Image (cartoon, rainbow, N blue to C red):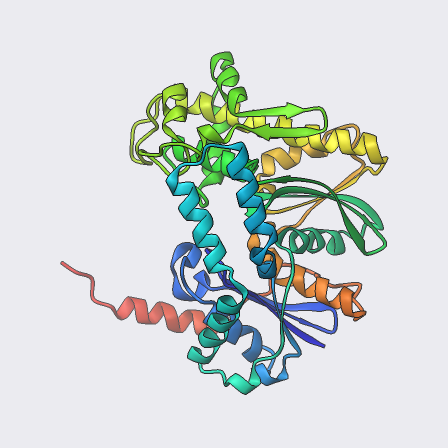
Length: 396
């Protein structure tokens, strides 16, 4: 059984190949086109690598899987956006974004565009196998649970959003995964941290690691902490975000936060070349601390409710290794597994796992031995590349 997982949604396009329940190949398009995140690229080179590296044609593939529930956009997601209209005073940018989402993930358009892209890559229409779609957060969840080899686990999937979900807590037992709690748009921890990243002068949805790395250089700042708690606060069994500081309002300086945010914290750092003032380090420190506090609150309350002490993490926010370290030290946590490819790349094989389990295909015990699944280069190839570079004349 050969399943090709494709990520062609936004940034970080990629592809993976699973054969008979084992992850065989995985590659990111940015590695081929040499453009960070490869935003807007179709994963043509990634798909061809997965096939050619295993001497396969597209006609040999049984299924294609994509980790996004596009069918939810015909009714459920539309209703969620409409329900949010009743609760919040949305700005025009937010309404336009929602409209674009409904259009982009319209099932008929999405599937037709996918087939056109594959044909443009040189594949024949008759060779395109059936395409299966799965919920984004479910794809994240299963991508972490199966490699963890826990029989029983809580799974936290945390990112910007996947369909309407921003954070989901799952209960997994014996390869069965069920949704336990969910926090939906606009309550996004990923978007909160993206706003913090942009405020510190870094590129959101790309340089969150720099915000995390800046945090230890800061010191506690109670004034900043109290202001951040106006945006993001814990509740008895979860958390909530006041979206009027992040997106439901006038946004002039940045898309990641509103003028209310600027009024609260002052002007952001312009870019990475700007001089660093200590308040930005302190802002980063407090933003990181708040994220850790919220996620640890979710972990501890859910362990108390369920008695399950094994934890799996996935989703883009799970790339925050400082947060992961704090979770691992909680006395309530017995074991922690973090999917190494926690961002959307992990959904390429997460959804392949989902399809296999749904159809009763066996999963290999050594499903993911390691993460070294992309192109590799021998000594002769490296020497050839170096010689070519040496021969290039250096501009005077």
